[in-house]
Length: 433
Image 1 (cartoon, rainbow, N blue to C red):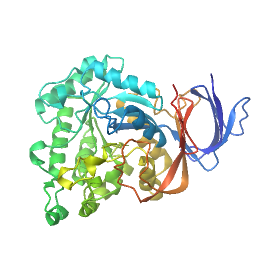
Image 2: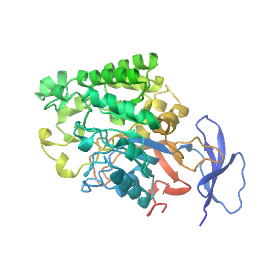
Image 3: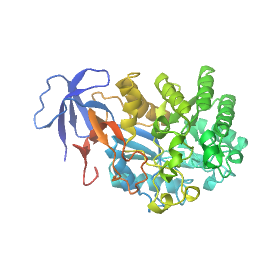
């Protein structure tokens, strides 16, 4: 049955105000003082209407690690955060390194019906870094994969990285690199610096990230291909990406919400919720990342949503798993960095959360500007809200580093292909399908 909504008096990303009519799965009208026969009217006064968010970096864990997350629970968390599309990383079991597995993940997303689930294919077989996976087969599959990553592991062999960069040119794909030189990070537990020295924890040097980024942007230039840097985390990495872009190299980069807000000082608590890969860095790094996001050196925010069961985090630091949740809080941190700081605006917010991630991944029908005829993927934010983050979550896991913190803004409604997956901050009991 066709649905019809009229969202009245929302603020758009350019600061103007308009009514938005949604008919079926499309935006059917945008204007002031609209009347719509048969539509359910939803007062959106005080809300910001933005293109539904697109995450380039989500771990949904299924298949294989359903004790941490499933496609259903992960996409429910995404919807609560204003997302209408997520790219699911390949480090599942079995690894998403074949057409069959990526098609399975995409099908689970369609069955859940809360967001578009767009699988990311592995670069190498089994994420082992030894043999290139069947990139072409995944690209030609029903999942139409265009982004490939061994995230969680670095494609450390420069020959394989070069071949992968060359191969994806045939279908305008992109290699998303987890920049971590493994020999420089053996046994590493946190950022290498003053705090690691005081705590006696093995340090994770910035150069382990920066050296891989430097190598890979030069490889991308050499073969004239696209490379995307996952979860960039250091001030030095920012400078390398800035240099590469000025040189005309086809490089894009993402930053996580946690690297925009949290520092390695939190590790003093030995609370394993703060253990993440790459590690939390220094305040100097945080400030450099924020400025780079504002000035466009860093292109997008990617959550690196990494759920874990309680036993993987409620243990001693050295034994704990790396990773933290991110989907339900990313918009608030983006608001803190871009809007509350007074240094940017809602148009940039929409770019880093919606339109640019979709552009990088070559997505269609997601991350679109709010225009008549575009697919009705919309996030409505109440920017005046202040919320204290609690442990309860739509995710199956609770490893949330922001619990107890007060963050600005709240996603009030999420419209996914014309369907309200979240209404008044409450998740729909079932997905669109």
